[in-house]
Amino acid sequence: MSTSPAASGFGSIADPAPLSLCAREPRVPADRLVAEMVPPPRFDSVRFGTYIPDPNQPSQTEAVRVLEGFAAGLGGAHASGAGRTKRGFLGFGRAKAPTAPAGPRGVYLDGGYGVGKTHLLASLWHATPAEPALKAFGTFVELTNLVGALGFQKTVQTLSGHRLLCIDEFELDDPGDTVLVSTLLGKLVDAGVALAATSNTLPGKLGEGRFAAADFLREIQGLSAHFRALRIDGEDYRHRGLPEAPAPFTEEQVTRAAHRTAGASLDAFPQLLDHVARVHPSRYGALTDDLKAVCLTDVRPVPDQSTALRLVVLADRLYDREVPVLASGLPFDQLFSEEMLNGGYRKKYFRAISRLTALARDAKGLVEPPSDRP
Figure (cartoon, rainbow, N blue to C red):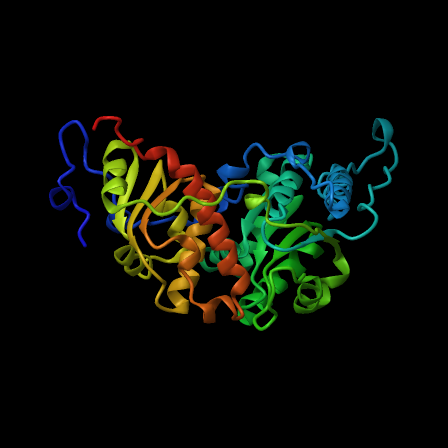
């Protein structure tokens, strides 16, 4: 069903037509990929002090304590020796070079979805005493996209001078990319870069409460000795003590909200899924540039797994950027089939449902309250 202004009847001079994601064809230069390797906007202001541990989950408090100490230990000279003083006091003799911090040079945050792993990972990035240009933060997908854009050796050169590299959602379900990134991380460890990571669950390993540390350490093989695993127990904080997600609105409500909200997009969900199939996932962030809200009509079940995995990436980018999502059609917990929710990518799909549900709550205020007129 068309959602164009003419078809919907909501366009006017006062209410300009909303944007359309389907009309966007972003092109992202390689230097932007490097510059954007910082915590996403949603996590700009997070710190260890803003993480609220669940009092029933002591592992959360312990994780904060360990990560604070890890960050403090990264404040000295680069472990490869960059920045070391070569001459002693008054230039005589040779000063003793600082040694690398004792213990593992990497931490792995091990927990189910919604326990705040990304919050803690971003807090580690913020707490590490180094200039932003010497710290990098990105998802596994963004890191592989960087290698694709720059080439392997150039990526090693670009990141080897960094103090810290944080990788969110390490993709254990892609053996080829896992080997590629593991090799990259080995080069960076040799260059003295500290590492921190979270990961998803391998195919066939079901259950959102299952922890992935053993899989992660096995898949990165020779790097495992460099990581200390921090287990973080808990339930999905996005739904802890919060009201149920709002039911989908009518198509008319969604369309009116899109026309009334400056910077909102309006697309039919099936057409959006077709469009993102033609856009590389590395560009999904650029696809959402400057959006204030995403309005979708005719939300329906995702037809296949390839489409579902693309939707997961898009949901992550919208969540990172705190873009509310207003929708008509089926509720978001009906996006994925039972077969998908019981398959190897179960954890990804539940994360997407969780994040889209949170964004749907954020969008609730975009809808006009019912009129009191009879």
